[in-house]
Length: 454
Image 1 (tube, rainbow, N blue to C red):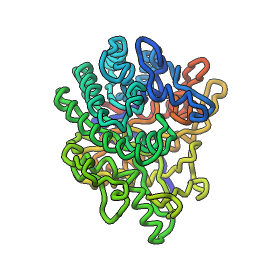
Image 2 (cartoon, rainbow, N blue to C red):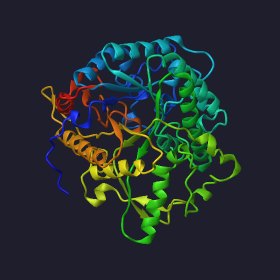
Image 3 (cartoon, helix red, strand yellow):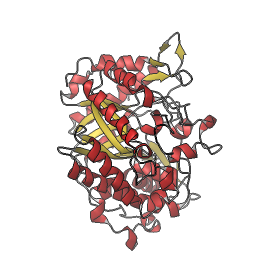
Image 4 (cartoon, rainbow, N blue to C red):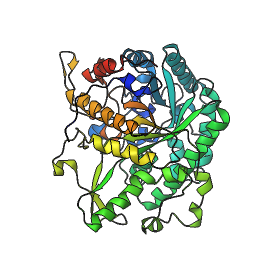
């Protein structure tokens, strides 16, 4: 389907629509061992040979810890009104629990104050994948103590920052960090197998609801959500086996965490998958405690997945047919570019009914950016954002209560196992000199947002 010419402006979404950018502590801050901060699982994991491309580490990253004032000026210069960032758990609680690091807390107080002074609305993500290594040594997300530790962290953040920060995201992509970190071993802490994945899922589902309750009790007029990574899942063919495989993958990728939050428990209809995953034994029956009445759902979307039946894959019996194989448009990460999939996933999550509003808390694309004569002419990224924003407007016009859009990311950063190779930023970063250069996509957003009053 041909994409219509892009004629939208930010004001077309309404004066109360939230436009912003997102970053994360482990990906941006650096200063990994400064001012009392303890190591996180990513500090340790990135030192293991072969785990991060090119041996990259987040030790310095974008040096946001020292450069946050200048970087917030970039947010303002580009016209964004919202800045989403996360709290480094090990910066405020170096051992994960116990003694508080006052210097770490002060950094976030300063960051929040600077946002407010610039007229930028701060949005806090409590947990964006950087568990303190001290807690991982005691079992991390597989430990029955993790919820006690997390609640302590959440309470500290709510009490420290809740007087000035009213917008909160409890967890960033729980399916992402439980599957990649505790089943597939591709992300920190690098564990594998169902024996790690199952308790991590259980505890993360509890944490997202417990965190919501803590914020509700501690922060006046709080606007509370949690974020999910979402992909439209399509069968490769019309065969029954491919359709069933796609349904199984949909449960894992899209439904595993939102349905417990909505009070539905873990999804299981018509399938033996979750029974095989032992989600129904007595230790998993916490349906009431999994539930929390979130003010919004943070929807994070990058690509769809096309699935075929594969009997060689244990339990899920499904595998992805990659975009390169299907010869469809894709990014430098080989993620399919498909704005219709974004439209469909917005519609899918809105159909739950119990969802009050949706904030797109991440969306973006990595390309092979080239800095030439002080310019990054990233036309592919501009086209990507135009197509996806049009798809969002289509969903909005059809009744989906989408209330905000946060681009990933403000600037190129440490992209987990991809290291510094994958560039998602609206601002180019030279990681040797830390020089920032606004890409043409950043200038495009400035123009797009120019007519926005909010």
